[in-house]
Amino acid sequence: MKNFISAIFLFTGIIFAIPFSEAQTHSSSQTEQKDSVDADDPITSVAAHIHDDVHDDHHDAPIWLVIPFVMLLLMIATGPLFYEHFWHHNYPKVAVGLALIVVCYYLFVLGNSHGPVHALAEYVQFIALLASLYIASGGILIEIDKESTPLANVSLLLIGAVISNLIGTTGASMLLIRPFIRLNRGNIQAYHIIFFIFMVSNIGGSLTPIGDPPLFLGFLKGIPFFWTLEHNWPAWILALAILAIIFYIIDRKYGKSQDEEIEEVVYTNKFGLIGAKNFGWLAIVIGSVFLDPNVIDWVPAIRYDGQKFSFLREIIMLSVAYFSYRFADQKAIKGNEFNFEPIREVAFIFIGIFGTMMPALELVGNFAKSPEGAALITHNTLYWGTGLLSGFLDNAPTYLNFLAAAMASQGAEISNVAMVKTFAMDGYHDSAFELMAISIAAVFFGAMTYIGNGPNFMVKSIAEQSGIKMPSFFGYIIRFSIPILLPILFITWLVFFAFV
Image (cartoon, rainbow, N blue to C red; front, side, top):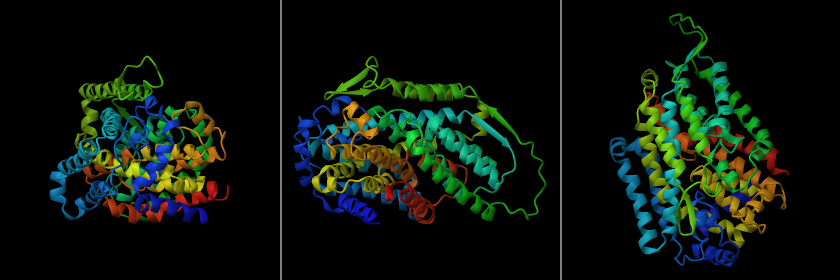
């Protein structure tokens, strides 16, 4: 419990207490060891770069610049609830407008083009991946002629959790959310979708770097490919087992009553697949993910500020998005009731998130690397610090921030591939446990809110397009995350970290 309280102090200090200027003093003292960080990494988090370039002499962002990010979160939470008409018609303007406030302040007041450029690069990578997976999977129609039962639903969720490690949480979510809704047609409820987000869109993808964006960024940094499988599988099994049991109990109680007098339906228990050729497009997307110019020298790149930015894989992904839709089986498109509104909503909302969260990530990174923050770093505080922030800031940059801070506290550099590998293999004091804590927390806690991980918001949007009434931003947290998910995250901490 003492470690948990320390983590809360770490989290609270990050958000409220630590001035940017104090953190920058410590950051400057480390610059000499880190002047090569940016040259090796085109897709790392915005905050991990803001102070690492010795040629940048811009000032820190003021704390009040976090306000647009907070405003956006509040409007995402309250808009659909209290001013639905305004929000539905104006959320693109709101998201882009708030992002422009922060970006313009960085460019014209702070003289910092570094952060916005990285935010833009990360956003393009993010939306290219999501769009290609969403559109390619939209051309695959999975037909399940089977009775909806708690056991059938649990089975599909667990299968989805396994598949998440092969085609990513985004790919698995887009591939299975519509069949899951159709399986429960006439009885689909919000809790079905929430557990899908918990199990398929987040926790399921904990075993491979392909599974979830934070883990893939760690792989590109130097963490061995099978490290996540070796270290994360016990927590993966525990969390999914508890969630499966809870879902089964809830579905038996609140699902379709066996006593209802309904027209008898004969099921064939057969599975049908239309648009199988789109699996080829999905394979191209997954393969292109590895075309990183900082890992493979021959991959072309855009060079800016001493860094190499990927563009080939994004071109491939967006091309897949176009051609997979252009040549998709129209029966599959119609059967899925495919439309572009969910990806449009995600695209605009995350323009706002990527644009406005730069100061928040900067604050997190600076405090974690400061003497005050470093003194609090243990595998326990890393678990709760990474986790709590991964629910509200995108979990990929949060993962990299805390990994960089954990390594810096032990004299290692995240830009050094050999050091990252040594850190992962427990070459520093408790370093494997620290990395395990960061990895599990970033993935698991990504399910705490709709914006913690990219697929969450998209699954919500698809569900609403299908006529399912989903809980609001706060409703999701209060009704599901806190009473169901948070105790599981606490149990995971107790079992794997608290007493180690």
